[in-house]
Length: 322
Image 1: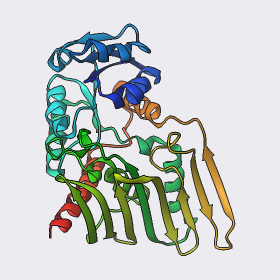
Image 2 (image 1 turned 90 degrees about the vertical axis):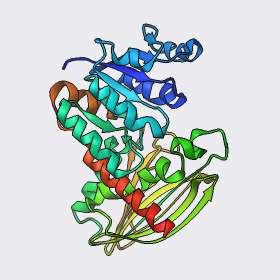
Image 3 (image 1 turned 30 degrees about the vertical axis):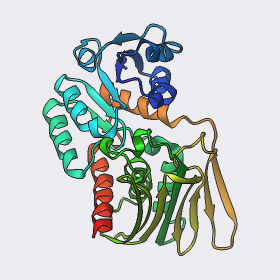
Image 4 (image 1 turned 135 degrees about the vertical axis):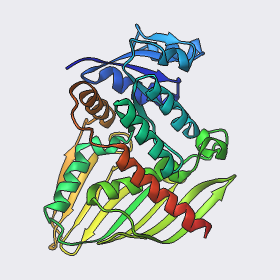
């Protein structure tokens, strides 16, 4: 496997605490460069990557011939612009979610990807975690019979008005931040797309959504979900069939919120549990990306999948406005 040399656009705290460390630890890649004008922020990355090259601008990093792939943790409203600029520079791109602010923008990214012949993907780490592959396999093996209803709850409390997730001009809001997980996870496991948003109850604060209750109809089941950035931390996903229930107890922040577990409840009430300790889904995501770049292995979360999730977010916003 050819070693994929990575650069990061911006010294975001999430990049420092999670993704930069994952890139550094993942097989098949090397954390080689960082673009930031802050020497102080760069030092936080050098504590675990001491030979890191630091560029003073994003453009300088994109012009670096020694960089193969770029990770973009910039504010949401900058994702499309800098993804397109990185692709134009010939770099593979892994961009934080949401990769775009509406589904139509992703068409531009797909076109640029295809024209340049480079991998471009949204950093949607959960599909790389084995708990989600297990849940999908259980469902498609008929372990809960016919799926009737899905239930998703994901919340945390972030009232800081200075946080970019709470600012409308940077593409903030609960649905772009964590609704992407609620909607995308159900689409991933079932392989179905929403037909209609049946109901919404969305709370707004300073132009961003802070809580969204959503019901939707999929071709063969009903969806009920709630995401909030103003409630006590909690997360859970249920797939409820006529012969059983699949339950994920730490579906999105596995290992941080709690240990990842998949529970399968049979009709007689007995429960079989699969546990996934010490799995780093960020590292698995980078390793999958590295394989796709160096060995042309099919990437498990293409832009077309991300477009489907963004389309559902768009549908919810349209229904809420109506």
